[in-house]
Length: 116
Length: 110
Figure 1 (cartoon, each protein chain N blue to C red):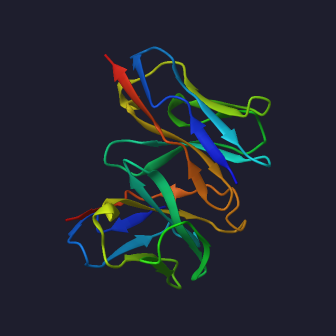
Figure 2: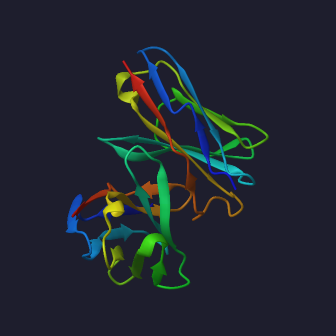
Figure 3: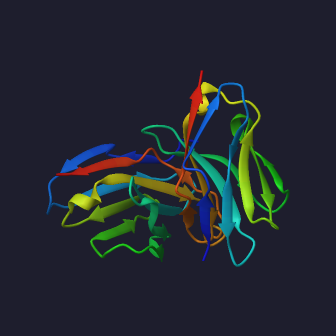
């Protein structure tokens, strides 16, 4: 099976712009989660989507949003970019069948976003 | 809510010697616990998962971890380090989301 794929791998944006990141889960997986990784804050949960619905959400401002399509692919959008949004954004997929509880999540390679 | 504390931010070992990465967790119920590894500029790779079926969990690449409820610990070990083990390791607790420890960077000396 192909793994989780994320596009693009690298992005450079300027403050105030918006950005959209894409994630394709492992075939058959219906849950997609997004994480932000920074040197200062480590790995933090953004949100999880299952069957096109946001099922769980972390503590990030409303500038961070996402969606999931009927084929389980997911996109994450960040509006009005700030310098502090520079990070590695990781997407993970899981089967989603146990309600997300304790499921193994499989990660993509990440999208590295640099905000100037 | 679950949380994880990795007791060492950096571990340095010689090639061929044992590796021990320490992790303590706090949870109000039996947790799902994982160890993931991240090599430079890569995503996270699953090493192993504790599922409550056995307290000693074997993972990939010779790693194993022991769940000790009385000590609320889930330490990761490998009997003999290899140069390719140099990476960052994360202990993770899971309910509906993953809660990551701060990570332990492992360096392996030749």
